[in-house]
Length: 208
Image (cartoon, rainbow, N blue to C red; front, side, top):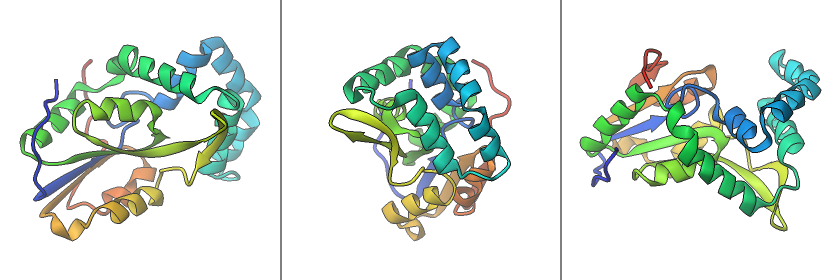
């Protein structure tokens, strides 16, 4: 278990979540958990033209994600959604975490290095996990109106250059002697370029 440890500001570490700390995309796993695998894969079939358009560059990541979220989550009660996300965090997420990534996070915390998880996935299931371990969470926010999910993203999808914007808004990086960054995809490269210690696909070998 990762212990709460007092931090200083000589070093800082930024971790992508999906594919870096976890072995699978958690948005997909959450949708399967909430809707069931049959409904999830049927939804992907319905949305296949959107997925293809995104893959070949005709649709932005932000727009494709909103279409996916709208299909699966629009009009869902936000309180119920958050409760299911917390349940997912307790029951399913532990089986998706890479031990090698947790070991690296633990080392940083033991060295009193602040750890920040920054993710394009919604904060609804990442924040509960981060909050247990004194890890800050910066993630995509889902729009809620009248207590229900709209299927829209509040602001921008926290991916690519958006991660850089969030980091530069919240942290004065010149205050840190070492900046560690961990990511596994091209969308993480802008964040990695901020770092003095870049770690691309660092946890490809792991055990559960």
